[in-house]
Image 1 (tube, one colour):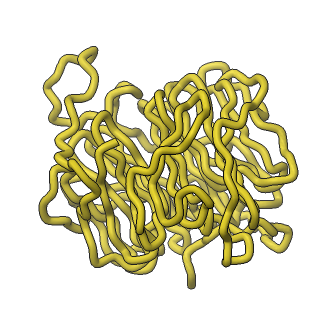
Image 2 (cartoon, rainbow, N blue to C red):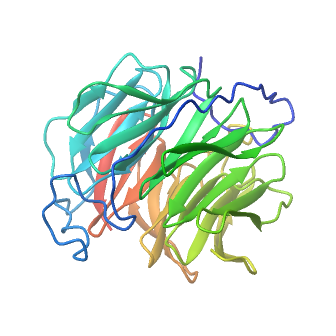
Length: 348
């Protein structure tokens, strides 16, 4: 089975009812703004230590993958899932040997790292699972999550989407809770502090949820195009849209308000509207939005950035086979290449 690439025509997607969130599960404690490892001895208000990334030009951190999907970061490492090989992997940001954290999994997809634990979804395994970042026993966080797709961690809480059950699930303060349910899939999900944001296929919208107030609202109302990739810096949510002819990146305040387009360009798409064929993923550091563009007019096979207030895109890496997911820290930008099974870093 191929990885769950997202088509713009989603009416044929049927959702089941396998939505058992399982029992209580407690995440490790960590401040939402601290991406440090469990062994980090820095004061709690010191923030994460400087990135050990040493890239002065685009460098390949890992190779040998087959269908690398999502990536995630902590202070020292880059983590990724390989959908086809069924593995969850890690490599040091500073370079070195990659290693496998978990193998023989059911098409792992999204992942998140929190306080020395990596969490991931399994698209055909229908679970949310976890393991120590240093390797060890795999634990099932939630079972019967039909088409588990993306996951995000914030503080003590975990949130995820399902592609076939069409649900948004969570574990908050050790208790399971379903946040949304529809007849079509939910895909990308991100969080910051008490705020969580996800994409709804059914309404072509970006939804928001505040775990402190327990309020669920629509942040970006559905239009003609489907938002499919999102990122947040705590002030705004940035979302990507694409058609066969153009792509755009928009921004909206986390509390709601008018949306603005910060970047747009023509799209060279030979894959019939397949998401990722033009714009694939966005990430932000609060100053720029970073994106992977497999086939956009200004940046073909490239990783680029644009100011959060809008402007021209600056290309950070080009000539990539098919850059897919992207993440950023204080020094470098990191991405997976779906086309050749590699993981990269470049100075941002």
